[in-house]
Image (cartoon, rainbow, N blue to C red; front, side, top):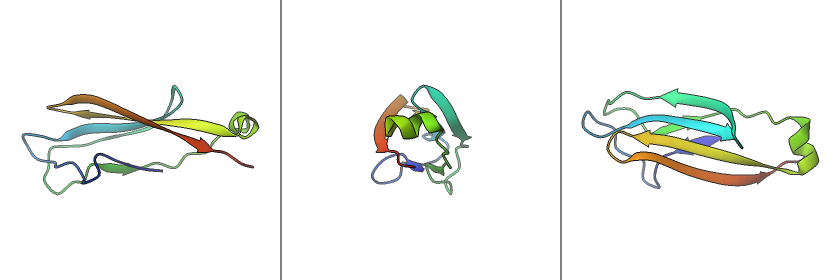
Length: 85
């Protein structure tokens, strides 16, 4: 699962940057990436997600991406994904 901030990737520099991106499966943490304010970094992270049998039985899972911008604060987005065995 790739998580990015913005349709055009969010700028990263000393005055304005993404501090972290995290991914949750529902309310359970699945991973987090911390960033530094450097101009050559991109505001995206890749996570490998392995879903348990309970998600196969339910047929779906909700993935929740959170991020924190040093100027604009906390942002959240979610997507329901179909889960098959």
